[in-house]
Image (cartoon, rainbow, N blue to C red; front, side):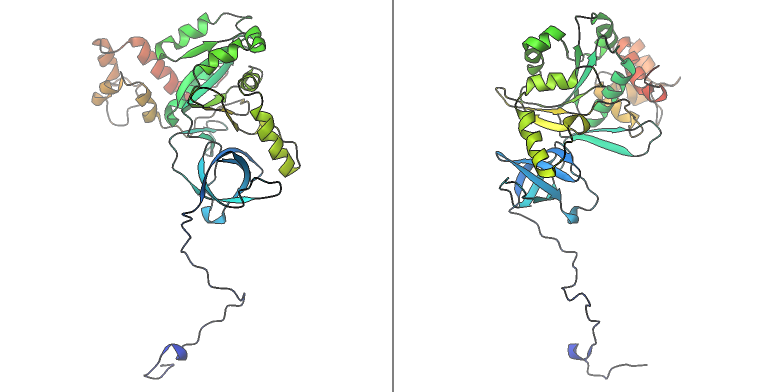
Length: 337
């Protein structure tokens, strides 16, 4: 049944009125070409502390980003009030592409991955040589996460006045990981900070370790004033007292080429449910050519793995293959084993 005559135009068409009295929604979003560039320093209850030029600016995520979340280390684009004054708030409208990502899950059976830090160059794995005892399985898991996320690992061993580092150095020697050995006396007189700072110059470094190993104490020694400046601003805005032990915090490093340190909360476990084992092999460039003869979807710990013959022919150090397989098998082992 024809509702209208032969000669209809737009005036003849009935349109449903907009009951809300506003313009219809559109899928076209502004490009925000004049947005300012910023760096996310910390995240606290939906509020993001960002560095815009030399100012600390509080911001929130724009609705148009949907479920995409900004994390510490993200380079973002902001619009709105960027004066940095108290009770002002900007909006994050864009998150730039990440160069690296440090991720973990609560445990190996948890499908939900947590992104800890973005765009870091290296991961400083802090472990005490005693009090508490070293946890090699946790170190292995952090190494796997670093290799998978594109970060270069750095092993920082503390409390050498209580136990020697020889055993750990022997365990990880084949991996050629740079390392630093510090003592309690070194933390007190600043010598330990100087040793670590040599590896941080011009880089973004995330620090990870379980409680009691001296991680936050070391970070405080590296950047004594910056933590107070950033956290003081956060507390003034939120009115609450969440401290840096419960959320990651990026702090600028005063060195010749600059750099950043990211203090992360102490971890009790480091789940690897999200890890693709095929990406871990890329951290062993001397073994990669030997995988050309591997069967499809080889886990590199199987009877017909081509790496065994590759190493037997003298193309690589057997200790390197052992270290690779130890790291790949860490998902099947509990951290306390």
